[in-house]
Length: 287
Image (cartoon, rainbow, N blue to C red; front, side):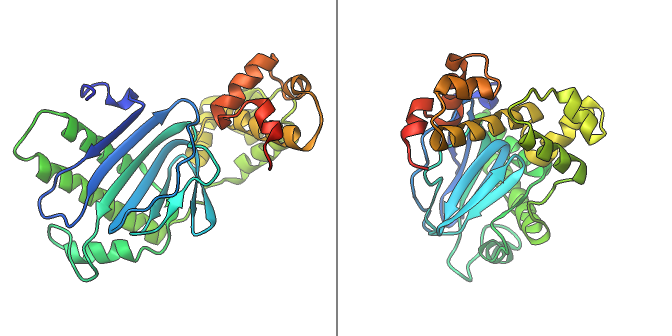
């Protein structure tokens, strides 16, 4: 078990949580991945809702044949018994929390005042993918600190307090919001990146195009798109490289240099970091 002061840097933590009176499992997990991992296979949580909060990066989940593209700051959830996976896509680099909460049978209640109303609201959320906010992370961090800290007679009560706060916030955000957070000025930057992905794209130039100072541009971009602008550009180059490898006969080295990579070796390193595939394997893999 990692020390309390270093859990934020741990690559993956899964913490079963004990709360008296809960009708099913309670688990909080967190990963901090610096490279893509193998695809998440199809699975389900009988009798439990799973809520994912993506802090940084991108991730795709597939439910009932529909793909949901998450960006940093998004929430995605699955209802009890729903099969879900990442499809053929890897688990991408980034930071993500997930909370699994057992729900009572319809008409039953979660612990605490208003427990029946909260259980009903969770079963009937109007959307499964929407924008989150900073309070969700605060609750997750507090739960991690409590669970990894010294034993305390009030720990279970404090953990349920934060779980309840998290769930109430999720209900409010699902009812009120969606995932559209794009400003017109940053959309013009995205269009510029797409048109000039094979050219140098210095951040000061992109900030000027958005009409923002460089610090404000970086902050606004990450707020709206879940990743810093430099990583967004790299991801766009990786996506274009995948397209060129699959749809053209250009040599791998030429693809690398066309997209501004300094060497074919660095190109291969980046492609494996984001896709878990070498350029040669991507060329052979069906679209």
